[in-house]
Length: 95
Image 1 (cartoon, rainbow, N blue to C red):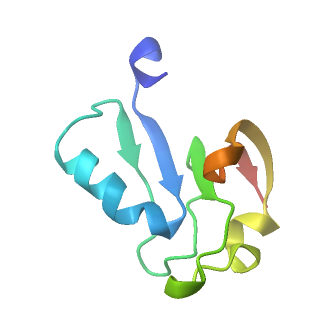
Image 2 (cartoon, one colour):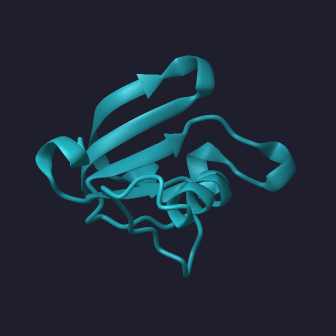
């Protein structure tokens, strides 16, 4: 979408995706993506993001609880959903 519109898409995501996104971002694999996550609190989010990729399944072993993520308290629109992978992509984030 960023390539089609010739602009960088601002992207934020659930913290369990952090290492994967950082790897591909640092490899310059996606020149039309700008990661805008909040680093101070890993469950926080950046409301200026165009899209937020949400892991909708808890991961008990690493302490990721879906109901405690700040994204659940935001109004948002579902852009796309991958139910088998427990991933939801949100857009239009607003408190």
